[in-house]
Image 1 (cartoon, helix red, strand yellow):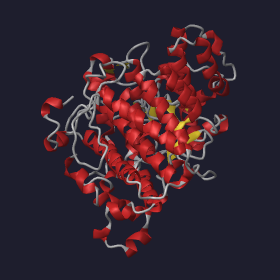
Image 2 (cartoon, one colour):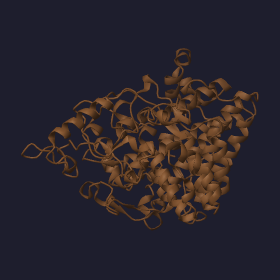
Image 3 (tube, rainbow, N blue to C red):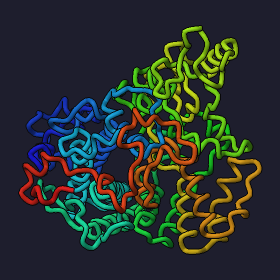
Image 4 (cartoon, helix red, strand yellow):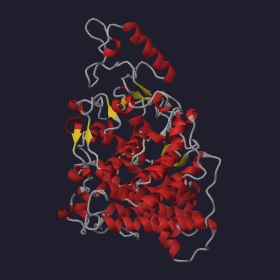
Length: 550
């Protein structure tokens, strides 16, 4: 899979040990860091796993030969899902790291784009190292212990995670296409470098097999440690069940999705209001099942998730372009739902370059923002209040419907924060959606009730008493609860929903800024939802030709 993947057998294992085990490098020459040495014991395998954990958020030039510091793994890929779906709305023109280009759908639709290339090789890098561990364990030369079973479970779960990510981005959605004939992605099960595109069905079968193997291994494994948020960077049986719930939901295996979601959330209670409003910046939150613990020594600064998505991060992408939510979604939130509090509907529009042309002051020194027409005193007072409440300086622009859901632990800084991948709330929503799709209205209501009643003091799920009304409500709850956490892209593919920023009063996005992405046809009739295969892969892989391009 390109020479860079072949090189990873030595180069990336060496890179992993630089960050994971300095003592190892002090006693072992560089040219001796080979898969044989690195995988000679369960302890060494755990070090390789720790390296995989690190690559999920490292700047990718440290992971992939020829990689770029402009992409830092899931710091970029997670918010990209909501950026592409039009959920994480840009209020002004700012293209740092190509974030506006992504939003305008001018990146993933181009075979030579950095995003297409690095997402592909990042996920196959994960698969490569999972394969090394799985292959060594399958040799049967190591003592089978509960610790080794935990490593085996993580390796299978990682391979499934990476394959699911690949097939959901580089192939047509399972539910909207013909999975038995649609081209998927290469299935690489050994540390080889190339492979042809399997069908979507074949890829999904392999993912299912890997998740079953992961769950089986975890069932006989040493449990994941608790008591420190760093331990949640390790995958465990809950993560494997959660990945299986996602996998089943995306392919319409509704009962499996519901059952696995229930298993995934065991031991991870829903957050209360105080926790929900903390900023989603730490694995320490009680309902976080899995997330990257981002350590200070590996900080990505202006390459991080919150640089792209949090309105408290001290970076140009945010200061000049505060991110806003779809006002149609926010206006629909009941006042009794505390989630509405983190979306500031009446934030003054302070940016003279705001895309809606309502920012800053006019020639008479009065606010252009219609919410503060001829009310400069109110405009200034509200600005000061928000700056003080959220720890911002006057360098930060404000905008109506801006969010403070994602917040730095240290607001106004560039400090690193954790990346959350899986939460209990998602599992309640998966169970509810799956049961609704099985026409089990009562079951879906019961699945949704704990989440809804926790978030909304006046919540009454019984008013959604048909499959149709319940599904619309589940979609609303999912868009609200998981806003900014990256699920928008895959949700729209599963639901076969397009993008229309102008419908029903408008989202608040600018047609001039969003260009062709202001309105996008639904995935079943628009192949632009499918990421292009990297041109470099087509050029180098004899099993993939230009005719295989999406």
